[in-house]
Image (tube, rainbow, N blue to C red; front, side):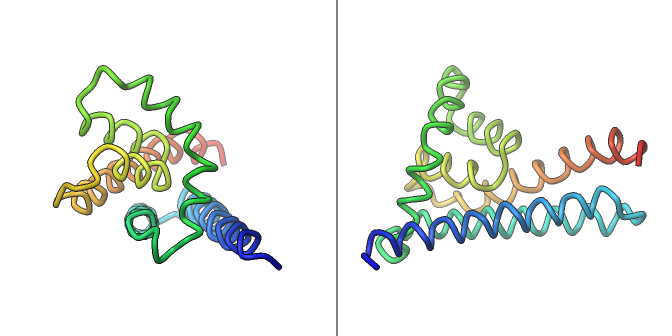
Length: 146
């Protein structure tokens, strides 16, 4: 197996793990009866995924498969950046991270403010907002139906 194929397999494996684990955690949190446990779980996993992705994208020389994931998602990322281009960079990061989740949050932070010393704090804040708003929306709409 060539080196390039191994990188693609690693990238797809990481992305699949994030996609599947994130959906399982979120659906379970919507269905849990304890609101506190649901919010804490979703927020913690949102923070974990976004910080891990930001770390991976910030250390592409060590994690070679990060470039593959970045290339796979960059087209969608640019579409959203163009939509929010009239806003300040930080506002764009908050909007994209809140709407699209940890993977796009990490890509946006790396793209717009790669040298800032506050990128991890901003990532944690936006992850809290993302997890809270999405869970609030789903628990109040879908959760009541179920």
